[in-house]
Amino acid sequence: GTPTEIAKQGYAASDGIGGKLQAATRARGLIARCNDTGIAFAPPLVITAREVDFLVNAVSESIREVLGQYIYQSTRRRPMVLSVITML
Image 1: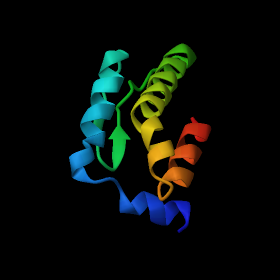
Image 2: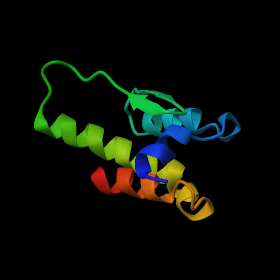
Image 3: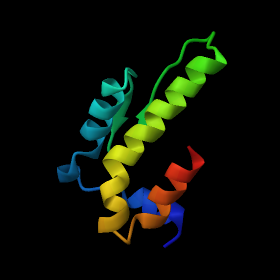
């Protein structure tokens, strides 16, 4: 399927992706709401370029940490995971 179709399939709740992503972002000092379909954060209205860099790095490192295993374990999801990591 296309990356959009793959993304809509999501991960099994038993994988606990949302909880793992939330723990990974918090370990990096970023408070984010993570579930099995996305990541949400609310940066301040006044944010510096340095803070944006921190936020993007924390999210991308967390995605790599948590979803990296799925790149190799699931060919069904591989295109979407790789495109998300590449974008960040």
